[in-house]
Length: 256
Ligand code: NAP
Image (cartoon, rainbow, N blue to C red; front, side, top):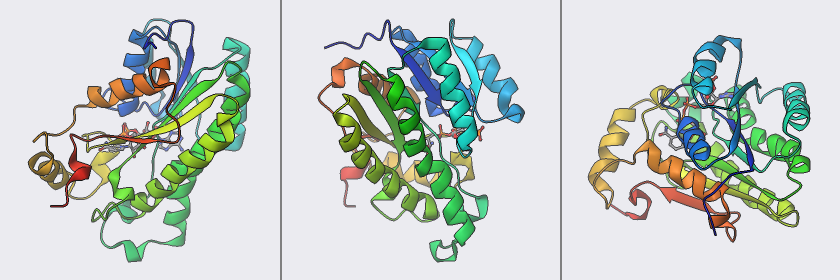
């Protein structure tokens, strides 16, 4: 069993900047020898993302807004033409309107609920469906979740509900795709200071509470999340599918 990804092609969604969890996973995949395709959402973000992406020799940048079916179709047609096969897909994407991540969950509007689930959850299903035909030799799909799916984290609100749905999608996708030797797993990361995290009210309180209460008495480092991404992408995890693996310094086991 090996972490070696030479000869494998990976597509990574969700690199916004050098703090992104997806960037840490992409760097790990690159070190393990994978050929990388990295996507960015739109032209507005192209410049920063492209600068980063070209810093990984051989990595290529592609545009894809995952809320648009035609962009997903176009991307996978391009990936098929460019690489033939695909072995790894990393889904490190989430979005909810800012007002939904403040105040009370009970105030969530129909539109915020729809957007959060469309971008953060349905996108995994759409990407898995598009990637599966290219994963002829089997494959590994990895997504990112957070413990707000299992417990109430004030202000995480609709994103907690979306993460619960995402974790459930991981199980259903793992069942459907298992017969094609495609594995689907989630990493439940402890809080990491990224662009998205800045949108969550009281995020610094969250960081403080995790560091105080976690068995390891600290917050997780983004590279620890990245390393787990490489593990799940590689044959070292060949017997694991439908799982949610916590990389949170043990915070989730605590009752108080
Ligand atoms: P991040 O750097 O801001 O990454 C989030 C990514 O989602 C960005 O690249 C963003 O692209 C992308 N995205 C949003 N809407 C999109 C769309 N319609 N199409 C394509 N891409 C879209 O933040 P992150 O913390 O690394 O988040 C990555 C994942 O980890 C998320 O699923 C998040 O919930 C999860 N997670 C984060 C933490 C944490 O504490 N940071 C903890 C547990 C789990 P744009 O910037 O271009 O919009």
